Image (cartoon, rainbow, N blue to C red):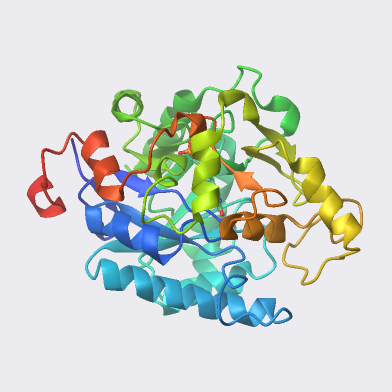
Length: 362
Ligand SMILES: Cc1cc2nc3c(=O)[nH]c(=O)nc-3n(C[C@H](O)[C@H](O)[C@H](O)COP(=O)(O)O)c2cc1C
């Protein structure tokens, strides 16, 4: 199996661990994935909430400080690994979190939940940081490439194509278009690949995200033209994942029917274990809580049209409140049947014998 090169970074195994907010992929998970030879991503969204920096009011100052702590933690685990961050365009402090990522030494920034049109401008002082937008269509990749080339003389170092029919978390497709059978993940992967080859004579890695659970999914993705995979849900039930035990247990306990779509106050559909959505709404209604921080640029909760705060609901789940916390997951989460380790996941996906390390892999 070929290694992956993103910008100036060689990644022994062609795997990016998908960013999982809020704090599901913190420094521990990202560091261990990087140590095993993949790209480990710290999810930046709301990362300050469950940190010593947060005092209940200072969301925007706590977030970058907590992010830097987590990146530091990841590098303690994987000093030479490829550690990056996932930055969501939809959050109010997108610009600050991108800059904080660079200041803390992130090697890669993967960015979705909107089109990261100004990302190269934000990272201009750190040209070695690889920039990787997440898209769900060829058109979105084209828009980003044209804008980046014209505005900043730069093109993406790789592109993640996320499948709205299988991926977890916020999805880049309209609710009514998800699950219709119309979306063709690998046609999109090949379309993006062809676009960069034909228009820009550039062979950048195109990474498939969504629904990659086992080795056969990985091999299928590579056969279908992907250069690598982005995997998220599969890493939740690992010892190193930053979620609470209760969050992991919810994955172990859920069935395929428990997983579905919700409409996020962020204005995007999201995939989650959806059984407790009314309890989540009722909680904030009972407590008469209103938006505490304005963390999203556009938010139905902030505007008073929705009754729960997505970031706090995700934060509660991360800490172990699975009754009024929101548990994001991909369609395959029900396949989790035991706790494992990041190394074991790598062993299975890449058919690594015994304790073969990333150094032996290349
Ligand atoms: C718990 C959870 C949280 C997620 N949070 C984010 C996030 O903060 N930003 C983002 O771009 N994608 C997020 N995602 C999407 C993943 O990064 C990834 O692209 C997707 O889930 C891949 O599908 P898989 O879970 O089937 O592997 C999240 C997914 C999960 C399961």
